[in-house]
Image 1 (cartoon, rainbow, N blue to C red):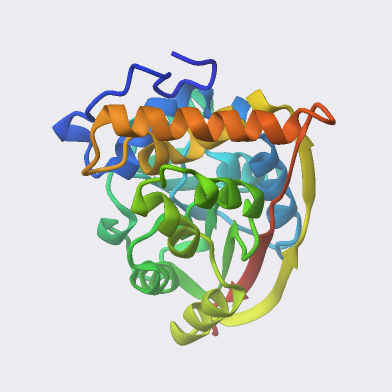
Image 2: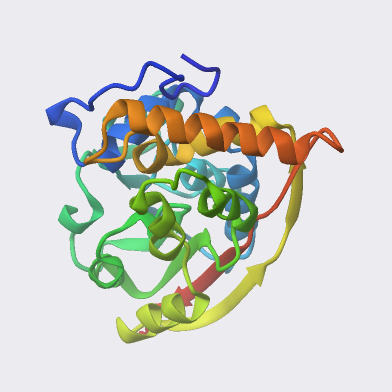
Length: 287
């Protein structure tokens, strides 16, 4: 296994049936190393939570909560939180969050190990519904946004952070240049999993929420090739390392060539340079 916790070259494994769909399997596979590999996501969660209106949030809902990057930021800024509802299909990620909250006897913690589309929520039962770096993975974003909005009390706050158009452009360019070509699902990943801010804006407004703040960050990062590779394994094992419908040997070969491309691009300056854009939205349920 690599330091990123994902299957190494030559050790691709079939996800167990109980951990399908593949998204849940992928994140459970990398959960132990997730926080270490995605420190930039932690900083993004901090910036989103820092932008929330200063008011009482006693009950919070974290959708696609993972290891709890958003939850821990909210708890740090708003000590009045009394209940946390975390929803994630990856049991490995929930186990990490469970450990983080184990000493918080003052909190009521409800962790739902289900896809976001199947979460069970009391109408108007939370003060804050938040999702950081998970919304783009949802098959039906509008349905989930509808459920989040319904779960908010009148006047409650909705907040989302997701990758925005242009994120990981350099990585996707490498994938497109592979010869022999990469699996078709790899080539389609940029369109499927990177959000157009206009799409997110439409979804939020269509479910009856009023946007109070929305912005896009455009950043350029320089990291070592190993750091970038570990990050991609941590967040997208289910997309690139175990693509449904492909033989392990095909994936192993394509990923090996992708790693070679990342290292080659970093050779001159010792770092892999890539852009990572994020879209942030803070909205409110009327009332």
